Each structure stands twice: as structure tokens, then as C-alpha cells.
Length: 88
View: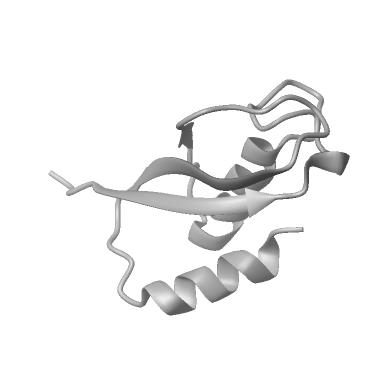
């Protein structure tokens, strides 16, 4: 039986190029971009749970989301560096 590790991330964004924070089919959203970056980095399908949402074109500070991984992140600074390199 594999162990699951739950992580919370805090982030901010300029919303001018997004159709809100919550994932929508065929729309560019903050959640969609974060999940795509996490999947690229971990090579696994990652689903995020956002603590709130914003409308299209809205900026945000100190937003939070959590996600679960099957493996432990050993070096959080390295993980954050790489995720920030991938995110637009």
C-alpha cells in the first residue's frame, strides 16, 4: 500500500490572461496552468483543490490550493524552483 503525501501551495497571479482561477473546459485558467505544471514536473496526473475562486481577469494574492502525491518531496526549495520555471 503506497503512502500519500498532501501538500498545500500558496500563490498569487495577475488574472488578465485567465478565464478565472477555477478549471474550465477549453479555457485558460490558473488551476489548469498549475495542474499542467505539476503534471509536467511529477510525471503524474495531479488534481488540485482550490480554497476559493476568482472571476476572469481578476488578480489575486495569497491564494491556496492543495494536492496529493504518491511520493514525498525531498527538497522543497528545488521543487518550488522547478515549478516556478514551468509556470507561465
